[in-house]
Length: 462
Image (cartoon, rainbow, N blue to C red; front, side, top):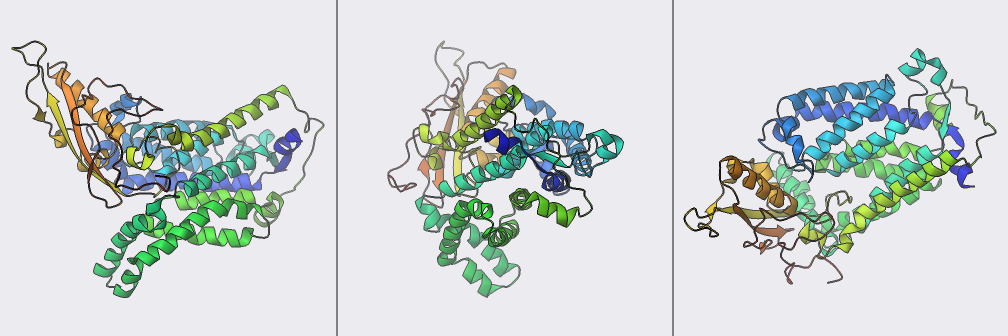
């Protein structure tokens, strides 16, 4: 039964349509990032970039060459959309996109992560075997079907994304509207001052409006995938998804993610119905073979790999529960866990350096303040002010910079205060902890992050 479900043949029309949309979204994302100045501000202007820990070596790619890389990725997007040199295009796009993803986290966005996951999926998925240039050049690769594990893995991926997006919203500042009120107030101010829509501005900036949308947002994330799986509720669910994502696209400015999520929903629909609407002249035939139901060694191994991938995708969003402290305070376990548009944080950070005293061995001179502007830009400073991994990385940057100047064994201290959802600023780091020689615990707690203040309620279970 397992083999029958995952490896039976289904019409590949939804997959072909998704390939085209996916390629066009690549073009929009990559070339749009150039024209809006996003590439310039994140990869060209910075002297150094806050990469994912372990990828600091990617700083060598910073500069104008990154613009050419994004141009190239846009071209690969066209290739993918038209199904031209598909394997080559998907593999190289996945590599390049992964490189840009791991290169910086100042402008971290969950859809960049989802884009990376789907990019690597597409490298092994035969989305070019129908309605593609490759089929014209190499007619023997043409197929009318694909294996059922392909639409299934897309559905599972969306289920993981939306389910955890709902789970992480179960905290006080979400349901009481505090976070969304801050966000909506910003846009309400624009409506009032720039467009003189005072009445609409008053509605959007009200706490009641924020609370209603908080509940609706939670219910949407929790129920959208189950509703899409049921044939009777699917039309209504898709209409809700369309409204939800278009609203988010307009108000939250989150790039292509709303359209990307909508595109993936094509896998919920009957592939034969999709084929009849989009490719009515396609001669549909399942062409089953005697091997379709065989549980071969390769299929067993591939099934285990899929299971491992799914389990890993489930582990990453729950890993913060195995780390001491609330992730909303510590940020440990925040990334790669679908914690989307969840909280508003700001911080104040001061970095100090203490150099060895040349006259007294083993002693250090008085601390001196590090001028952050000499190393990073305002956007990077703002993000670092509440991100402990970036603080740790910056301490390493400073240490290496002093070594280049001939001053070794410096101590680096980070004094940071953090505000969560408009709360007062609380001391976040131990200002007397030397970060210059501290190791980073990837799946554990950093001792220099102070405990969450008792008066700051971030969980219903505190």
